[in-house]
Each structure stands twice: as structure tokens, then as C-alpha cells.
Length: 251
Image (cartoon, rainbow, N blue to C red):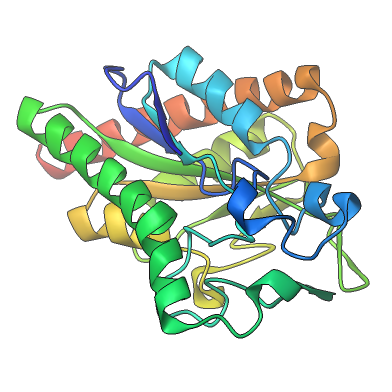
């Protein structure tokens, strides 16, 4: 249910993909939804896992993700968040999530949310014990139109208190000619979407950034590879910039 790929990777990045899967376990049925809804963005981030896997390969980076739809539980939300287990996602009602008991809610947390975050923590603990350099990047995708409002950005980079990694990535993506670039667009940490990185990156003072790619840019496997190539370059450039900055600060 919680998947770790290339867990022994020695590269300087750890890749997370909170919304990698649209799978709903058999015992929960279809949550009262039709197949179209279960394939839609409300259920997962289309294309995000393909980009994540390619980045994992290119950067020798461990990758951690839950093989479970965010409609079952959103692993990128605090357990107290109102949309942890949504009864409505965007404009779609989720009958199977309506009026859950405290026990049912706790069971989903124990089944998916808790083990996902435990797996990340264990991986980061192990890397720290080995003295491995680590930056944490989470990969997501977003819809071209949200509640009738078009989103012009092909990609957005989100950051919170520590913006060093995000600023380096944005600078390189700009040099690649990608525009317009979203800086804390189409979401920002104030929207409650930065939970995983705040918990595992910022809390450990690790350089962290969240990537949001517009999902019409990820319609094919070759498109996923193209965006992984662009992000590999941007992440390497951001790391080099971080090293140079740290060097100047200690000179």
C-alpha cells in the first residue's frame, strides 16, 4: 500500500508523490462514484507518478508514495484538516465518505496516512544517520481549469519559509524558456497543501519544494519524460546554487 522505490538511492534528493494513485480498496467499493469520477483529477494527480519515477531514475533518488486514492484519504493533509477525507471534492459529492464515524476515520488514518508518513520519516532518519545530503521535493499535477477559472501556468513551484530550493528551480525553469511560471501558484502553503513538506522537510530544516505541473502537459509517457528532464535540470541547478550560496556564507 505504501510504496518505496529505489530506497537505497544515494542522490541528494528524496522524491514524494502524495497523490500518485487512484486505487480504492475493494472493501470500500467505489465510494458511490462512477468510473469517470474515479479516473478524474479529484481521485489522483494524473502524470505525477510517471514524472516522479523518471526523476527517481535520473537523480538516483528514493521515491515514496501511497498506492491509494486521495478520495480514500489525502496524505498531504493534517489529520485534523476538514478535507482529509473529503465528502465533496471540488463540485463532486463523495457518498462513501459521508458521515464517517470516528472509528472509520481512525481506521483510514491507520491504514494509509500514518504508514506513509512513517515510511518517509524512517527514510529520512536513515539518510541522516549516513550523513547523506538531502533535499525533499514532492511532485503533483493540477487541472487546467478549476471551478471555471483557467490556470495559465504550465508549472508552479511552491515553497514556504525556506524558499532557497524553489527560487533556484524557478530561475532555471525560466532560463529554459518555460512561461508563465507559477511561484506559489496555483496553490500556496496557506491553502493547506504543504503538509507533507512542512512535516518532513521544513521540520528537519531540509531544502524543500513542491512541484505542480498542469495535467494537460502530462497526457503521454513522452510528456512525462520531458517534464522530468526539465525538472532534473532545474533541481540540479538549484542544488548547485545552494552549494555556492552556502560556500559564500562560510567564506
